[in-house]
Image 1 (cartoon, rainbow, N blue to C red):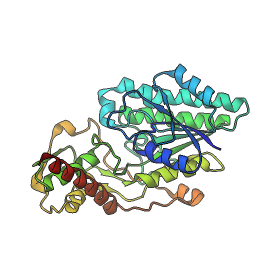
Image 2: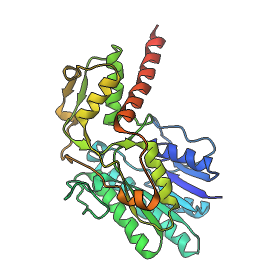
Image 3: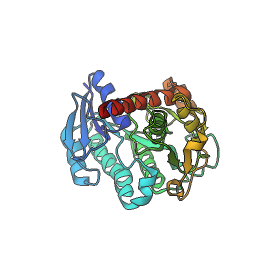
Image 4: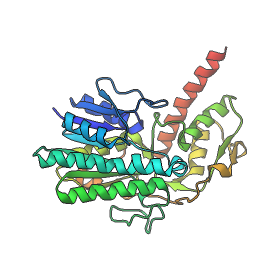
Length: 324
């Protein structure tokens, strides 16, 4: 039986991955903060361990006591906007904690244990990318504290892999699902489209509408993480669709799914939501994971947005019913 240790198990990706690992018969242990407000409940059957990614000694002790076969790091600050407001915290929980986890895994490896490590990296490591689409060999040029912390962690994975650890990075491009927290712009858009269509709010305030992203379906990306974890050889793998859409495209698709065609008059641009430095276009080349691990995305952009809007419509309808 595989013994897996996860961080971020109550986040969007972590909740899907924990459910998958448990269904496959794994013993799943999860590092869980005491305050998980707004996140998914821990998957039934997983073992919770109260912890903090800033607590290096606590993380090392947890790895030493559980002795996992697999460690998947999905935790950390996941918002670029938050990283600008709290750069030091971002450096600790998104960057330095990866050094702690990798070192703890190396110690098990050095004792003869067959332990694997998978890091949830991010397209934000490329920042102002020198090429498009980006590949695993594209130089890292982050433009935010979040991207810089992820880049540091990404390099560390490579360092420990060269040392002999089965350590891999899943370079995840933007991906969404019904479990995306409302603090993210995509969920903000689908929630607003649903509420505006039902008369619960009038307008939506956003930052830049022209930024382009490579958006995919979160369960597909979790499938990629699982494939990377089980691969014969460690490596870095871009997980992306290879197709870009602008924030404007996302807004249009969301309002269309909610039955609203004339969305322009309902959306306002607010400078407060514009990033200090924006990455204008991100597009990933997932040829390596398609070729080596047989991964393919299953859900297209419009289908993804529609599913999110329909979910938010159901929530809004329940809100209306509760007011009666």
